[in-house]
Image (cartoon, rainbow, N blue to C red; front, side):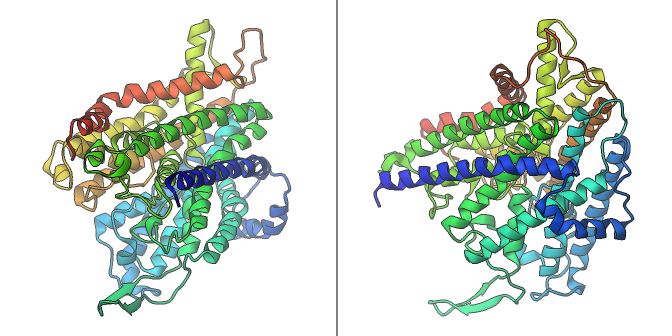
Length: 573
């Protein structure tokens, strides 16, 4: 196949993928709105018995709602229980069943980091899954957290939306009901469908022990097996990203064909893309949902095209060696091509998924910068399930505050007046994760425990450290590579970063929801700024870019930007 034909096939693949994502996301958004508004659906008629059974076993009163403080308390209690339970499971796995390879307890700092990682929907992995975790730990621990941590994000998002839809009340829903409905009516049905598709395409699903085979060189090789398809399905649908194998979706048992690659990217985008449409349906303004989607889509496509152009342009040092176009295939997914590798990497950092099919460390500097920027701005393009939409709506609140200053009137958004409390919570939400990245990154480059884990130095090494903490603070979980993160320092530092990134987003969002739900709607007037028109979309895009640029430009200039310049001067790292 000629290069032009291969490139055409890649662009056709991407066009079909993104078009199908949008076609599925619009009705899915309407469905999500019906689920959380308590309306009847076909899926509800099939699974309502399970919802009622969970309430009965757990003693949940589905008609009892919570204030925002009670909602926060429930989220925190559930998260603490999840962390403790997963940590304990890892430490006891040597005494539990489904441990065919006789794995012992996970090292305590790695176990703690993993427990926090999966409970915060980060799924950062500083270990090799097939060499560390038993089948029981993978299923009962990691896969379960893939469901409940994603459902927690969706639940908080629904509570946040209710802050805009309610007036003169101090309740924003029931966390346990929102959590249950997220799993029973959304994540579980989609995961079952996707898992069957993956199994049909060759992703393994087995509880048998690892297989020992003889190679052509007459050596013995261990082939890991496991219940992979079921975990891969929810890993993408819940924007979790935690791989069953260390190589994640670069492993042929997790991503064997072009079709599985297609559905993995589709799955990580589907719910985040659907949530703006759910938002529009829940506030009875579908134009507003489309404006939020348009903002995300503009940022997504501009960054994707930029990253693709720079990656296809290649490395000038490789051109000097006679490699056509200077194309660097090292670290890329050679089965699917450079463009598909860029799309996967861009999607996984834009949605806080964290799953990878190529080595991000191997991209040229500017694409690497874009992956960093995606996480640095809070992963609001399209973001993780629930938290991505929350993040962009927080940016929208900030935008309306700026607009209010420009036109000389009190800021408002969707009929609710924005006062100092909402702005304080918004600032905490937007600035805490970047502060975490910069503070922990600064510590890492200042002490031997941080620098000794690096495989590369110079600006590339700085990018590796920045990426580590951006991934942790952004609850992404993908790895840039080049850092041995399974050390006491990095396990402890990234654990703190993950907690900061998770709860300085969720708690302020719930506080804003609680405050807004108590306010009455302000009638529209002649001076009301309409927020479902193109000018609002462009203002929101500009605010996101400026916030990210002001926060990260100095450190990015010393990292990927400097590396890009040095690459053209003949230096590599």
